[in-house]
Image (cartoon, rainbow, N blue to C red; front, side, top):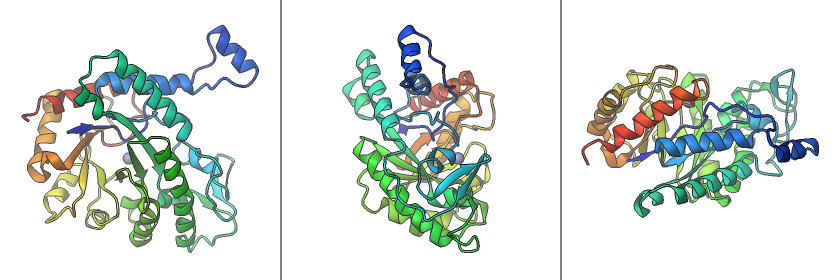
Length: 320
Ligand SMILES: [Zn+2]
């Protein structure tokens, strides 16, 4: 089974340290986030994770996109939609994705992985989904706040461009994060249409991450035009029962969240193995990717690393 992460990793930005870095800082070229990306990627590789991310170290999942999408502004720490939403002129995540791919390539060359193991490795591109972007922002002109649909569809076309940038930069898989879909406040039909706009012409596998209890929406999101549906199964017991209740998975693979990312304590290999085995019995190992429940930003680095390491060990010691 392929292992991955949902996205964020606990890594702090770093002020320049070497003389070269300080000089770059002086002329405005030092990127304080690069060391954090390096750390996040290296930790994930060391833990044995197959599909890694850049750690989403540049900030909040909404702000990163709001800063770059024409039509949006950040004022008083609030993301606002002020004008018509257009696709970003430059990619938001492509440079970091390429940077992460280089770290992955260099590290793999130094480590003793078999060719078969190397072939499973890659970098996941992450995009905050259109519904979540719109529901997390304040409406301030142009779109009427009662009719969010129009903004969600425009946002989908904007993020479609970002998905293309990420695919062109070598993403092995692209994930849309849509935590709002499980909240009960969104129109799932519009959310589905928006996801379809983004995934339509993308060739690499597309995943949809929806956290929370998905009881009310799981049957519907299984029909979204993506390849993988990723949910939390460690922290939310009810999601296992929801899996059991399905008569069909509509050809989808399930991203099986196997670590409680709200808890700092590290699950034992045995505990993770038991949970994964429950999932295997319901959906079959060939239909699963194994990852943590959600982003790991709130954990300490020590806990995040140990959790991932145990998760990979649990997968590796499962009967083949
Ligand atoms: Zn999540």
